[in-house]
Length: 296
Image 1 (cartoon, rainbow, N blue to C red):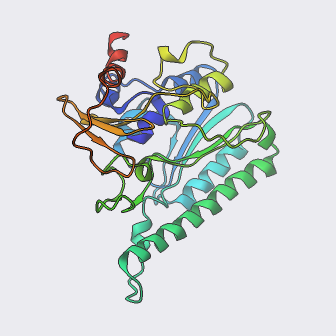
Image 2: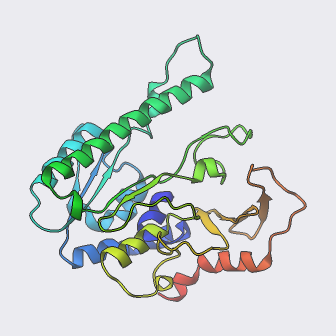
């Protein structure tokens, strides 16, 4: 549910509630309120339910679908749309190449399966790089690169059994291989810098609210995240879904289910059966999954 966190800035435990009430992401609601032109494009027509049932459900009129969806058609539609814009705008361009890379795994018998899988992944990553280059070239050619914020990221990582737990792909554990994603930001008038502090998917919407829209409200009032450019230390970050969530600290990873059962892992994703998580951390995590109900 990384996509939910990116747009809503809160844990995925709230997905069902947002779906039921058709509640839009607050920063996208603010963009519409401030008369930004919105356009959403996808290489798979936003096939995942988190998009069409939750994130984009209140914004269906801004979704541009293709009869034969592909990254190529999504890029073309996005370029046409951008070239027609005369005022402030916000777009989402979702590329599906990485999601579908397993369709291109070679049948060659000269290499083992894991090498062929990695090769297909690398090949798809190169195609995504080419697509990103095309996006940047479009902005340059239109002469708007210097007043356009560009964010390149993903909803989750992809594991190639680095944890040696026979884990491949995503959504099978909370190791860094499945959670960490690229986060590349082009922000006019912000100096180039490489940040190495811990960030979260929850931080993106806060950053856009504060630094793009000028919102001065305390992020605690509407998000579980903080500004991406705030490098103050955080005790933990959170990941998960409606069934369970993980609290990732500098020392370990604590996974809790909705019944209160927990497991503790080190950062190599080896379970530590003797470890007991700090009660204060668990209480903070549980509170974060419920406090927005209390404030509703």
